[in-house]
Amino acid sequence: MKYLAAILLLAAFAPCGHPQGISPLISELKQGKKEVKTEMQVINASIHPLTAVLEVHAIHFKNGKGSVDPLTSDMHIQLSETTVKIPPQQTRTILINAKCDQLPCAFAVQSTFSGARTNVGASIKISIGNSWYVCSKEKDCRANFQKQ
Amino acid sequence: MKLVFIFAIIFAPAAYPQAVQVSLGTSTLYSATGGEATAYFANQTDLFSVGVENGKFIAGFSNRFKYEDYDVIAGDSPFSLSAPGGGLGFISRGITIGKKSDRRTFSIFLGATGGIYSAPYLTTANTPHFGAGFKLKQQLTKNWDFQTATILDGSLKTFIAGANYTTQKLNLQGAAGLLENKPYYAGILDYRPVRFVDATAAHTTYVFKGQQINVNSLGGSVTAGAVNFHSSVFESANSSGQDAGVGVHAWILDGGSDFLHSAGFPNTIFSHVTEHVSRRVMLSQFITMSNGRTTIAYGGGYISNALSIDVGYSTYFMPLFVGRSPFTQALTINVGIHVGSLSLHTGTNILPTGQIRWSAYGNDWAYGPLASSRGPEVTSVGKYSIRGTVVNAQGEPVDGACIQLAKNITCTDSEGAFEMRESKARSFPVAVPVEQFLAPGEWEVVSAPATVQAEIDPQVVKIIVRRK
Picture 1: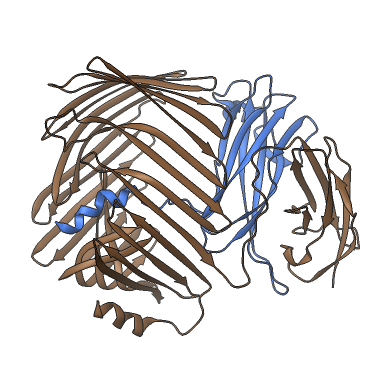
Picture 2: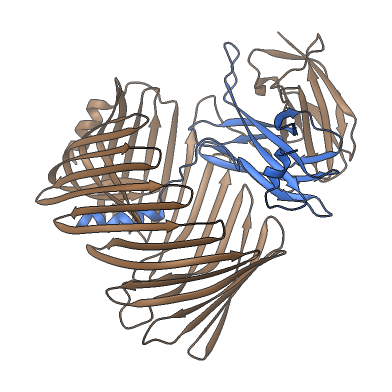
């Protein structure tokens, strides 16, 4: 029975099982009179330091089909940082301020991870996007936006 | 111990590792102080641990590598089985061979077996018996998975089989068998018929200092807008208790109140209010009313990338309590500090006996040319910004070029554009650190402004670079 004594203690320090990437993948936000303040996490689960470059795009839906386009002038999306260097097995939080002149709106943050630079050879990048839906009401925001 | 060093000599690689993680720590939870080093090689990972537990020297070693499609661990290998309400784990000091595919994972081990000693800064074992084991996890369908483990540890026999069924509305977990020659069964049912209703029933078995503790619980919650109503019933061999409460989220406030009842003991009302002062800072107040007495306590939290602090009180059902109410409020403190790749943590844990234990540990990484560097901590979305583009001599955007403004480094996106936000409208000296470029190759600067100004609606700065 001795070995099982550690079970409860192990659970207290269980390592997080996040994959390398970003969180949340999809989020619905409610915009009032002021800008919406939210945040996202950029996760480096690898054993090497990585650099992530963040890029914001607009999401549009027309006749049920979605497209990712450059930000339009009626969407004001600000990130606290657009480049983060993340040490191994750490997470960085990016603050986001979002305000759309016309609701509902949606935007994507594309995070591109790069490893160490090289003078020769190929540079391998992993690009992951998450999407944010902004509405006057949070409930069914994404579904209603996609019906446009 | 001899076995550990034999493995170390046989499997120690004659090469430099790609990365080395070093951890050190101390804990009253584990009664141990020590550290470990994990060396990551191209094809294998080595772990060395040394420490002192209750005045006794302890050490561990493992060498993980791939042999064809198999994962092989020589040395200490934690062996765990997920079970409802927790996990069952122990350690093997010998050879473990496993294979993982999309739908099936299995592993077998042979060697000395016994008690695992695992902390975030130290992994080692107490292995007095010869033993062997087998573990299988199989995904049967999209919703069903099955797992089984057989472990022979000296004269102690463990055989457990379990299954999980998961859908959007229902999560069912069950496991049963023999746990070290004693019958064992556990199960959890979680049903969420609609988004705002949740019901849970569970029979869980916890093990603490060789004692099996069975807890039955039944609970439910209903959420209506910003208000959540919840109720739970707990029962163990020593005690039973009921909890009914309400939680509210409004504006920048989170609050709630729970009525805790256990037969034969005074009722307790535990209330809390948390004010989210900003995205980084929150303040909490905890009020406990019991047996005619009211106590007030305060807590709070701060979260940033460099520093996180959380101080508060939580309510626990303690099934081992005898002669006192099984409900207890315990102080929880967690502090995390990140400086570059260095991480430091300290925090509290509560034992099933109600005692508070402390742990403090840290880890860092060592590299050759891959060292990480960071600018100052960013704690807000700055009002002012600096924008620009980096192009090559042909006017094409350069993806992965980096620009240094004071101590901050930012890199260009796929359009060759960069942006940095600042809290003050001031000018910054511009440097183009070509050695930091994410784009491969050797680069040099053709033209760049000496300074740039952070403004609310800034001019787009243009920087020209070319490959050498």
